[in-house]
Length: 217
Ligand SMILES: [Cu+2]
Image (cartoon, rainbow, N blue to C red; front, side):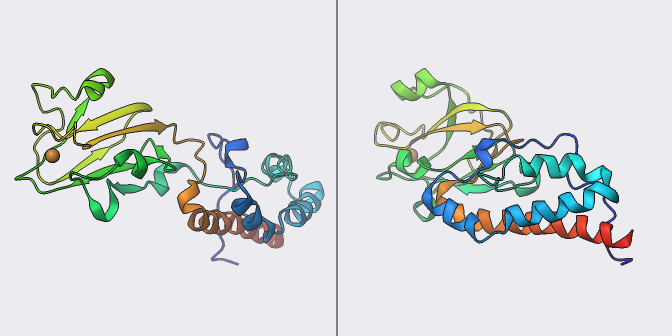
């Protein structure tokens, strides 16, 4: 047992759980059905009574989601996502970036990567009204145009990006996203299965941590 995790409790003070982490659609609910959530919580409750009063808080948190199990995810910092804008289409004319962004969830700590032909395009971060009117700011707020521009999403709220080449923004090279608080992320619908798998691993990890501590006693 010397190799067991030495962490004191599987939930730390800043961790927040909320209904956003519960399955949101049929697909995610189906995924969670394969996880013996109630039974695991029940076993942990047994352990907490006599030997492990220090896990009462963690178990209580998990237990309050029994009817709608929370798909656990650790703070977003450790699971930050890199989004290549447009995916394989990258940043160019003729793509509906509204459609690309649809269904994706962007969190503080995630990264946007604009990949493009730097001899033809560029990227400007703009304000909402400039986005609407396709007005190019006089300064380049993103630094240099490399054709592989990385933008760290550092704050919450709406962010707007356009191509500053004449006519390209009007031609569709415009992207609006909303960045969410990373402390209570929910699985993105488009990547639900991967995330649920990850969440399940974390969930299992927590259980094994608790169980191994219990066995040590
Ligand atoms: Cu362009």
